[in-house]
Image (tube, rainbow, N blue to C red; front, top):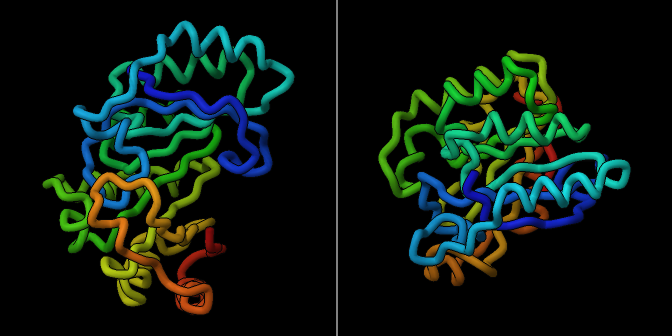
Length: 229
């Protein structure tokens, strides 16, 4: 596992659980608003943390932490992701996986092994706008396959979208909600122009609280719950 970071304590990254966060290094997307450029761009990579060091830390936190969140970067670019997750599970922790949905084959294998307890998938845009947002060419069918897998395997999950005002409007949010119609939870995330992959995004904004409330209202017919973060 290429591990580029560790946050030893979090109260917000796994719903209702105290967690540690493992950040994998490497990603196949290039979203301009990404706040983890040191895990995405090779020229800005953070130093690797040995996997054994992570495991030794987690052994000392049994009974103190409930869960481990594996995020990135994009965890599913790691060929040994499943093996790492199973090691974490063997220590008795719940596991949450954050993913962009690019690798449904690995995702299916992970779910079939009952290796994760919660999945959060980022949906970047309506399908026709995807490549404009992520700045690379992909097989968009992979995104739809991952959505279907997550929704139909009976695992706890959420979908989420980071919203930059210049990129997505109300119609786009509705189109995304239609892609995940029937989903248990859809989170609308406010873009914060702080630490970004593309410096041009330092001058970009998100919507007002009132506009986000409007987004919630138009999304509600399609999903069981919608919230704003």
